[in-house]
Image (spheres, rainbow, N blue to C red):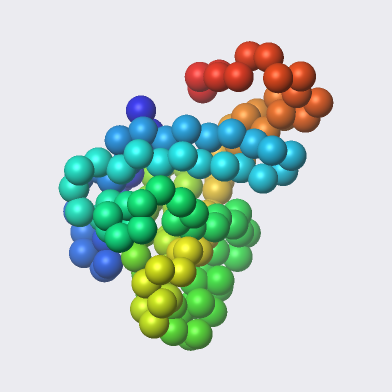
Length: 137
């Protein structure tokens, strides 16, 4: 079960529902891969699946300068598609309104405790021998 959002906005409107049914994460080297199963409710994830089918919906970046990066993206014409606040992180998906099929950009602001969790997930992939494929956190 994904970590629930304390605050979640879709296209600027606050919503009380969650948008992730399940999220599976894995690493290949330093790159995290997320497989997201959206809920049946309307969301940019659901829109992507209905419009394009399975595929690359977004690229994500961990940022220490989160607010500055959002401001810079908005200055270039990007718009906030999804904004979420959790106990130990914030994230924002930015979309190009002129190209709805382009992958979104996800910016993530992690508190040290959440960054340590990601490091714990990544470390087993270093030198992985192909055994113990699934681990629960």
